[in-house]
Amino acid sequence: MLEIIPFVLGMVQTNTYLLADDANKEAIVIDPADDGAAIVKTALERQWKIQAIWITHAHFDHIGGVATLIKALEYSIPIGLHPDDIPLWKMQGGAGLFGLELEIGLEPDLLFYSRQVLKLGNNFIEVRHTPGHTPGHVVFYNSQEGVCFCGDVIFQGSIGRTDLLGGDHQQLLSSIQENIMTLPDSTRLLPGHGPETTVLRERAENLFL
Image (tube, rainbow, N blue to C red; front, side):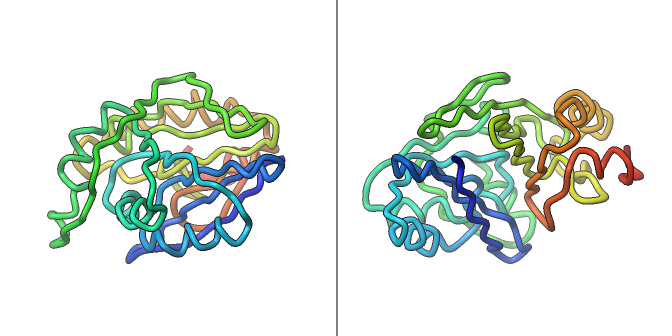
């Protein structure tokens, strides 16, 4: 069974997710936005060992806690990102455009590709490339639990912005239709900001679609 602990972190209230297979105590972190020490503390309290960091996209508000998380762990773990977002990563996720500076640390060394299958304990999680918000945006879909970690592609009643560097509105809409709306209606959508929703709800109520 996949256990999910959400955090709301950072200056723009980004959703960070700590996932684990409690049966074997393996865990990963999706989009560590800030306060990596708090994420590690929660994992340690549950006797989970964090194995990797998976990043939906490289905007500063989704990578701001990477360096502090790795420092708190005191051991090295892979950092996963789609290669099309590596240039954005090297720009500190665009932090400079907002007058900020990030400590990023190591570059990603686990490169995602579309339809890649990742393993977390007994759970299989599919990577889906969903460009539009950023060129290398991905979502993570677990069919066993019926949950999709969708970053900034889609929100409850809204969609990701496309006015930042690398954004493309039509590409984003195509990504949503091909990779999100094709999931079962009951699929939980856990976004990068705001409350969770479902495919059924967004199909019925999202005016952007």
